[in-house]
Amino acid sequence: MKTKFIFITGGVLSSLGKGLAAASIGALLKARGLSVTIQKLDPYINVDPGTMNPFQHGEVFVTEDGAETDLDLGHYERYLDQPMSQINNFTSGRIYYSVISKERRGDYLGGTVQVIPHVTDEIKSAVLSVAQNQEDVAIIEIGGTVGDIESLPFLEAIRQLRSDLGKENVLYIHLTLVPYIKAAGEIKTKPTQHSVKELRSIGIQADIILCRCEVDLDQEIKSKIALFCNVDPDAVFTAKDVQSIYEVPLMLYDEGLDQKVAILLKLPAKNPNLQAWKGLVHRLHHFKNQVRIAIVGKYVNLKESYKSLHEALVHAGLENETQVVLTYINSQELTEHNLLKKLESVHGILVPGGFGSRGIEGKLLAIRYARENSIPFLGICLGMQCAVIEFARNVLIMENADSQEFDPDVLNPVIYLMTEWYDFRNQSVQKRETCSHKGGTMRLGAYPCVLKPETKAMQAYNIPQVMERHRHRYEFNLKYAAEFEAKGMVLSGKSPDEKLVEIIELKDHPWFLGSQFHPEFKSNPMRPHPLFRDFVRAAEKNAASGVSPLTEQEVETEFGGTA
Ligand code: GLN
Image (cartoon, rainbow, N blue to C red):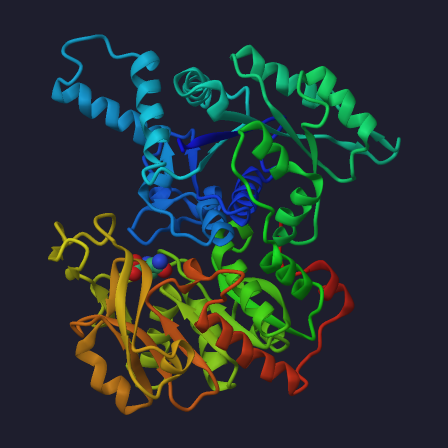
């Protein structure tokens, strides 16, 4: 069968959950026995989000093959349970970069290079490239909102694709907002009408309208929207607000969305097997315990910056029948004076990844508190590096220990700039081209890590070697290894050539572990990550010992997932 394409556009405003809708439709079609691939087209000029500030853009999601991508790819992986790669995310910048490179090479034979057809052709080939395994369905999410200048070339390209691929192989789904005005008790369809009209003016007639709304839309309203928007009366669906993002696939299934998609595209879809999703939602509503985990980081104001982390903690809670309540603590505001007040009621402390020296002292204080008070601790990437610095300064009494990232001329660089590493994908040694501390190559994507027997890491994974995803420039300085080990720090994970330390942990502590990689990228709601699972389990033990039970308000506001 030829791949059928579903294009998902958004209208009225951003943040309606287009990524989650795309991922959920993918999950439902997969549950119907179809093979599915998925792609995000982002209208910004950055070639990839790798250089973008997490304060603005949210998390950078790293794939197995080392692509730095939009956080929606994290949802795609979690909902489809299949790895994403370079081909699943294109930005305008990447498209233009490729067109301009071709122009410089002379590929256009002196022709005038234009948005139509050159940029749109480049977009079309990017879209078609995602279905490289002839999947039954390719879902393409167009970032931004209809009406933005930026997304016009993408919309023009997907408009053309309907005639290129044949009407029967292409479906347009438009996600809009249908506001419910509480005071008047009224539902407003006008913004949706305008947005569909806007889309039509570019030449795209939506086939399905998905309406994000606080309340269920009744048939009368749906028929009204269908009439004004020129779609089948049974092609309007409510995407109602739900408590947890993992309820979205079942909610859309109950609406009949995937069935309509299958009918319109004439897909050979079986009845869906939704057992796993039903089990997941059941567990979300039947927690037995609760724990409070503090995330001590720099980007705490925008929760999107720690998206995968948040989800990984929710997954770990699901496996432990534990509701994980997160408190985000800005490390820049953490001082010796307020430390106890901010941390005494938490059952576990997590210091996430990050870049730059801002807020490091606060992180070191939190880590010391966790170490000295037997609070379960998980440090990720920068968090692991900080745990190494804290140990050096306060246990090894190496006063001037630091990372070269924060002080390039530091006397004791316990964390230092990686100058070379073995790249197993290309089977060659990667060397940093310049020794500059800013910019330059990062070690990206999945690399193997060999675990040391009889450690907490090995206990968690229960296999001798794992693959985990990386995004870093600095590493543990093995010159100091013996000193650390003599005082009780265990180097429990290393690269196969033993040149890079991947995991550290403490011997005399209930659960204190740091990883140079980002385990959160590989956690799945159906298969929580072993390190997160054990971290939450340790925190739960701490909570069971009676430390600060949760208030009712906390339990309610933090259901275990955010939309
Ligand atoms: N800034 C640190 C490094 O480059 C940590 C990176 C991270 O946390 N992702 O090694």
